Image 1 (cartoon, helix red, strand yellow):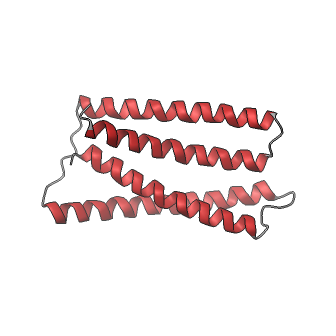
Image 2 (cartoon, one colour):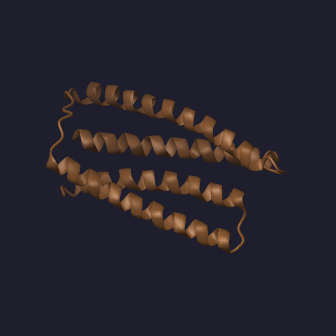
Length: 148
C-alpha cells in the first residue's frame, strides 16, 4: 500500500469518526432545544468550533495509530516520496471535491432563496464540507486502486 493510499484511508476513517461525532453532538443539542431562539446560530457556531478542535485531535490520533499499526503488521518502512502520479491523483480528487462543494453551495443558496432557515443552511454547508472531504479521500483511494 502506497503512502497516498494510506493517507486516503486514514482520511476516510477520520471523516467517518468526525461525521458521527458531529451528528451525535449537534443532534443532541438540537433535541435539547439549544438551537432555539435568537442566539441559535451563535450557539451552533460555538459548538462547531469546539467540534473542529476535537476533529483535529482525532485526525492526528488516527494517523499516528494507523501508521503504527500498519508498520507493525506489515513490517514495511513507509516511503513518503511523491511522484507525478501522486500529484495527478491528488489534483483529480481535489477537483471533484471542489465541484461537489461548489454546486452544493449553489444549492444551499437556492434553498435559502426559496425560504429555508439560516440554521438549515449552516447545517447543509457543514455537511457539504464533510461530504466533499469524504469524496476527495474516497476518490483518491479509488484512483490508487485503479492504478490511474
